[in-house]
Length: 151
Ligand SMILES: [Fe+2]
Ligand SMILES: [Fe+2]
Image (spheres, rainbow, N blue to C red):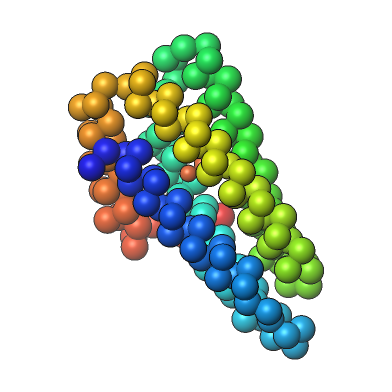
């Protein structure tokens, strides 16, 4: 399985978690639980973004001017998503509103990756290289339990 297929799978899993968080009407007196749920989603999302930053994005560097522009746009999305994650995790942050903002940013980002970035990578990078990156992705996940939780 190549890196793109693995990332599609992670998007699916993260979207299901976001849906569950959005459906959950948390009473005000149970903010801690809501924050804990946000933290769980935030760690998974950060880990996904970290993996893309470390393995996916470097594979595109120097491929073309267009690839550079697309890459910068995706890095900027990751920056914004990390900022929204920090805000959603903060106690008393008005989590339901923060969560809606965050969910929209993540959905838009995934759509951009699946609509622009991933097809571009399939065109620009030889199949064998994408498979090798897939193996690196699986190794990254195998080592996850030894990694410090992403900030
Ligand atoms: Fe991403
Ligand atoms: Fe992604």
